Length: 388
Image (cartoon, rainbow, N blue to C red; front, side):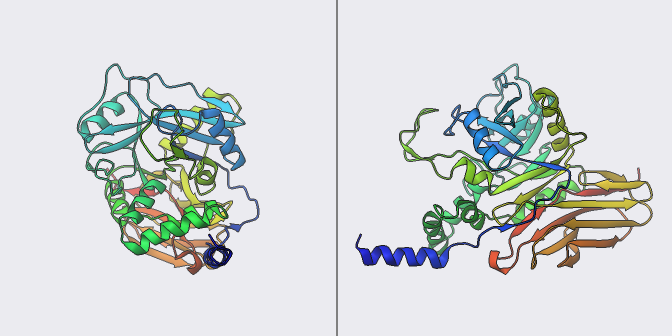
C-alpha cells in the first residue's frame, strides 16, 4: 500500500471513529457487574476460565457465567474465583427450535434433545434457570421458535446476532462491518457498541409473556474471542483470529445485579446469591461501550411498600414510579407501561404517578443523537398483577 493510500485510510478512520464512551464519575447503586453467555476452549471459545476471568477483572467485572456448548449430562464445574472474579459454569443447549442458556442445573441423567418446548420443560424440571439465547438471530438454527415454551429469561440483545443481522442487511450494513474492522483497534468497545441491534419482535414477545408471569430480560455477550476461518476441534486456535476479544466484549455490555447481601469470598455461597438475584430479575443491562459506569435505580411505591426490579405486587391504590440514574446530558429516560410510553424525560430523576390497574412497568434510557438514539440501559420490569 502506498504512502498516499495509507494516509487516506488513516484519515478515513480518524474521521469516522465512533464517539468515545462517556466516562461517568464512579458511583455505587448497590449492584455488582457481570456478564452471561461466555464460551471457553471447552467448546468454541479461545481461552480457559482463568484467562477469561483475568480479562473480566481488567474490565471491572465481578462475575462471569460460562456457557459452553455441550450435553446436559456433563457435571458442571463448581463455582470458582479466578483473579477476584466469580466464575459460574452453565451450558448452552441446542434444541430443534433454537438455543437455550441454562444456569444452575445439575447433570442430567440422560441426553436431552428434541423440540424447544420439550427441552425447556425437561431442564426446568431439573431445577435449571432457562434463558432463550439470541432469539432474533437471522441464522435459522439459532433463532428461537417456541415463545410459548416454559423459559425463565430472554436475551434482549446479543452481539453475535447484531453482526449477523448487519451482514445480511445489504451493502450499507456490510460496509459498516468493514468500517468496524478498521475502527476496532482504536476503540474496541465503542465499535462493538455501535454495531449492536435490538429487536422490536423480541421485546414484544418478552413483554407479552411478562404480562402473565415473570420473565427476566438480560444481555448475552456471546463471547468467543475467536473468529474461526475453518472448522477446528475445541481448544485449537490455529485457524482463527482473536476478534472480538473477551475484554473488548466485557467492556461493551454488562448486567448489574442487586444482591440480598454482600459477597463473602466463598465461591459456593456467592454463586447462590448471584443466581438468586438473576432468577428474581433483580438486574439491569447497560451498554458500557456508550457510557460507564452506570448508576440506576427503579422503584414502585404502593400501599404495601416499595417494589424493585423483578418484584410483583397486587393492583389496588396509587402507584408512584421513580427512576434515578447518572445518564449523561442528552440521554432520554423512557418509562414504559406494557407496550406504551408512560413518560419521557431528559432527566436523571424521574417520578411518575402510574394509572391504577394491572401492568408491566419497565425503564429504558436511550443515548443521544451521536449514538443514533440506541438503548444505553434497560431495566427489568416491575409487575402489578390483578388480585386473585
